[in-house]
Length: 152
Length: 244
Image 1: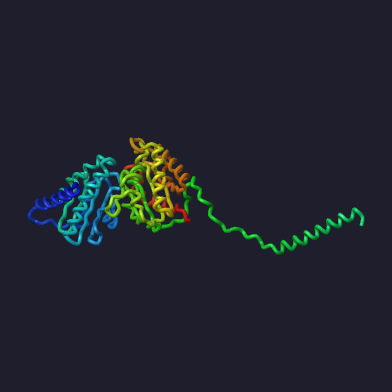
Image 2 (image 1 turned 90 degrees about the vertical axis):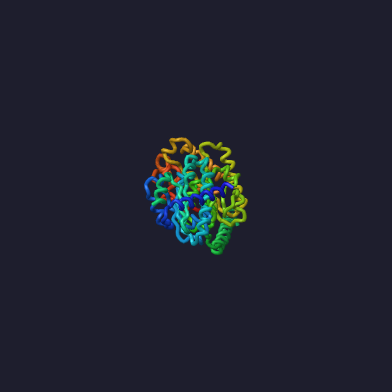
């Protein structure tokens, strides 16, 4: 139930952001957007480490065969910060990725609540946004940088 | 024949006879062959010695079990393993007694995760999360229990218990795991390896500076390993195996 609710919330966030995006439709995400966001000052407090495609797909439960491009970065253990851009082969598979990231947020909250309780707040401000057949997933230290990025 | 000569003659005859027999024996006995050079038997009180690198393929049929440090290894090193069983915050009690592992979307206990597998080696690193608070006897008993489960499910697998690398000086000075606790728990790990006759891989060796701390170049938070450290960890495992 919790996971379903979170996934729905994530989808709602995506839709609302799309609705507020103005008249011009936002472009789909590309893997390069992950690097742009990674380098944006203030978004992350930790130097995140890249995860390869196969490992990331297994981690998130995303079918690797549906992924046409991706870039994923995570924390080696110090924080909850995380960043992923997935370009899927269809909007439907992008929806599945959105659901997967919802589950990821819940799993991380559960896993970190005793281990790194101060990091759980970052998961509360996690961003999952779908554009076309692409999805952005961010657990930032500061969500403002992400909001600015998405609004640009 | 006089009484003096007869014993002499007999003695000479005896010597000749023995000599002849000896000569015959020596000529008939093949040269003794030396045994093949064999490796010294494993001594469980010692860590696995350095050996030729086995390469990363070695781990493709290995189980890698551990806490967040191991999770970092599995996520960020690119190492392909047979089965990765890691969980942030894992300790020997939750590793043994709880459904702590997610395998193919299912949440499983250790026994369930290993059931029916054919992996040929198991690497375990546990202890840093609990060394500051867990009773030593409980740690030892639970770790022995983990080894027992692995042995039951994978009776033919090699078991490598990894020593605990230290934390940084800064982290050691704070609350939580410090390097005094780490050293104590490494002593328990040594004891366990002797009792259970499993291999001890002294990974701590490569991550300990002259002051007994984790060097800053290996970690951003004094506990978890950066990518360079993960590669170093793998290289150490590659060069410390037992060829049976």
